[in-house]
Length: 138
Length: 376
Ligand SMILES: [Zn+2]
Image 1 (tube, rainbow over the protein chains, first blue to last red):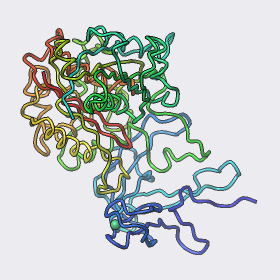
Image 2: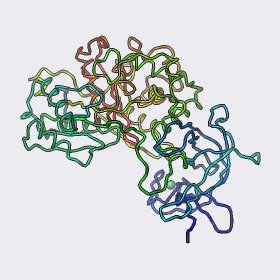
Image 3: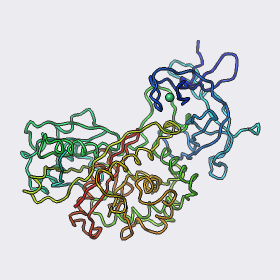
Image 4: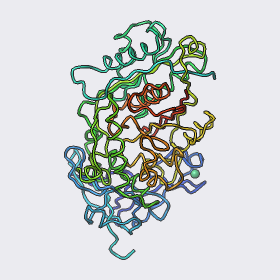
């Protein structure tokens, strides 16, 4: 009996609904973190965080195109930093786009997608998130 | 805090020493530095040893087993690529505090062919290439792309850094590589992580460097006239994007501001800079981070040759990490070695004439930034 598990804890994969990224928002200053903190790294307020769902769309901040990687990692791939409208950034791979600077532009709209990236040691499907060029004219 | 002087430095050529080990390499550099200072191991009261891959292997004590066991206090330092420069700062603190009159810092690393690419994760779940990249070439590629985005910097401008530093290395007999490359060579070399090609990435290797730091009284006895004007270490404050992309700029700027203030000099007073060019993209960012030029002017600085040997503010005349090599723990002490040689007028064919003030900068991703400003 295998299960589906998200690749990182801040990726939420509800049984009924769209997967989304969850942020931890400091109630004192509004800074959002991916993953829990004991205190806010920005304003130092302790322990008052609320979980907020993050947008599935954002814009491409910067990227690199990786041609040489660790053993066993298929290349090339587009390594990206995506800015979400909530003011938080995500490290991700950009898919469904040519690994070529000519196909990529700073600030281009992108949207989140999910897929099973691999199986873990116990045979569970590992669900990962990716971003791709926005298709709905975001 | 009292003044601290650098009485001696030593360094072995960076490269591959597959028949030797870390304490042996570190010990050789330590003896070179002691000879340079005119001191013996019995004079050393404190040792800080920096070695990243062997951070848990008591490298400092094993170095003393190679060169003389006197029972002195030893600390072993790990701080990513800033490991060696942090060890230097520990030795500086030991002397500046008044606790010791002679301190030594040794930085040493044996990387073999193991690269900055590292191995797979331990969790059994691969994130590399799935959640973007955590590898150094991509991280510094992206950091360069930020500069491109903000200032219109071009890949060719980044590539010119590699051309310059590889050219500089041909005058440094201690450099791992001593080969000139053309702009065309750099741009057409194998792509590692856009925009950095092979020649725009530092090599891996083995190496060691050491420095002996002494009190003012000892310095007078020894005739040591290079002084540590500032030794600063910073970590990441909170910054925009919360380090989703490691931010090598903010903590460097903080370190530079503090170092210039402590040293009582400004960037205009600095005669040469050794900065952390682990990738060609990084060097241009640090021109601005260290105040060598204004915001957005780094591309022009490299275009105009201002940071080449003979230019207004020579950067990485040793060949830099790109060519001299980057044995992680050794790097931060080796760039102090370089500055000291110039301040003493002993840098040979690559001497920056009349150098009075030099700045050594290192970044350890994660992050740690050290800036040491020395005056002669
Ligand atoms: Zn806060």
